[in-house]
Picture 1 (cartoon, rainbow, N blue to C red):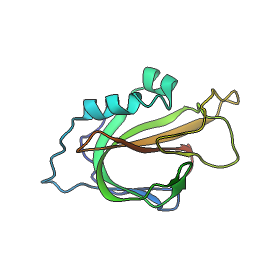
Picture 2 (cartoon, rainbow, N blue to C red):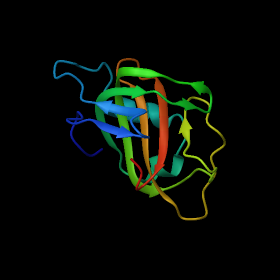
Picture 3 (cartoon, rainbow, N blue to C red):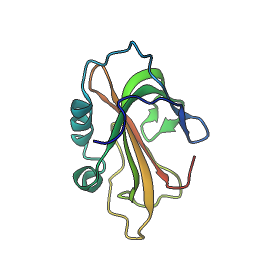
Length: 141
């Protein structure tokens, strides 16, 4: 794992619909970075990425005001470990949109066109429950 333990500045994706704000300095998560990464890996959403790339795992307050494949998954300032992979080969088929993955994602398959993406996955910092993940093109905000 790389990076600092907590986000120090706000990070926004998808026009601000997915946001990570810094967690309060006094907040202490109940699960560790390693436990959060292990919880994400059990989802098997991006198996090659999780197996071969180093994740940046940081604590933040996760807000998701976006509808995903299983319906609305809205979280507001939820303490979460953010598992981040930058500029990695996509493992999802091209669908015409930008996928957002909740607990029941579409079937993942290697993407033969060589696209590179950024992946953000979110695991509840108190329960270890997988919350959601997004895959966006490298140049998206």
